[in-house]
Image 1: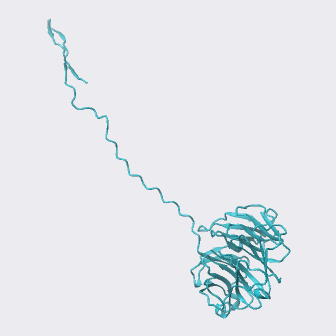
Image 2: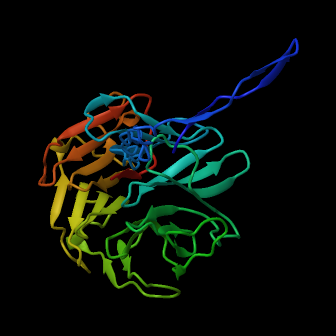
Image 3: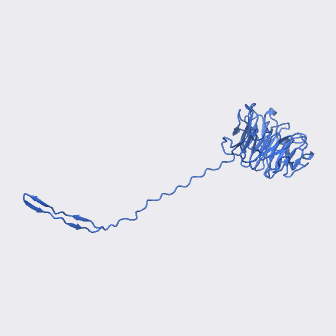
Length: 360
């Protein structure tokens, strides 16, 4: 590319004279600087690392017990699983319009309770997420015509999240996703006075029978309608006779634990996963060294994923005896008249007529 300088020739008439100015064009050499056709790119900023994902909710390592201290409502208290001695509860669920009872946990640590409103007698089964803090329930099954539950005298949840309800006419089973006015997926009709229920890893339902020589009946995972129990426990060898059965629980191997206030034992009996008929327990925890007061009380029992047993009972040598419930924790190998690993009493907890206790 060339550039040019132009000189102009002009004729000027000044006072009769003329002057000539010429115009010429002079070429200039081409520029020796070539244009930059590849500009230097701007520096690429170093990308920021992606944000850390939100951690999943943590299962709370709590023991849950029912508290009937208040005269107008029941509540659920929770305390750390590692606690010992006098302890302050870290969770308090329930109030005057939401009386909560019959606590149970599924394998993910989600919490299931029976909610009752003393002011209008409305009841519902509620599921709360294991996430902290507990807020609104994630699932609600109202008690009444919609769910075909006339009443709730016993409640538990299977490891898979199915809800089992002793409803006065037998045992209703709701799927792990049932909510609102859903029909039960199964209903086992029974004329027996069913009391407490627990479900093992194979979905077998163990149900205590009040005031019967057949202390515990077992329904299979597909039982429905007028199905008969697949097994039944009862007889002198079981040591379940002559008294009152409290809570029951099963562990990850299918063993059954029964809290028993019976003729010959005040404590916990363990049975193998296939126990049937007049079968002796494989383990018994009872005696003065356990620290549990040998008197009529609502015993509850739970077992955690490590095999530790938790028993809700009245503390021996307490003053007064009838107003100091405690949770007794026994090691997986404790047997006979064994001392507990720890004994927990909770602040402002003086009445545990409800026998249900739960732990993950």
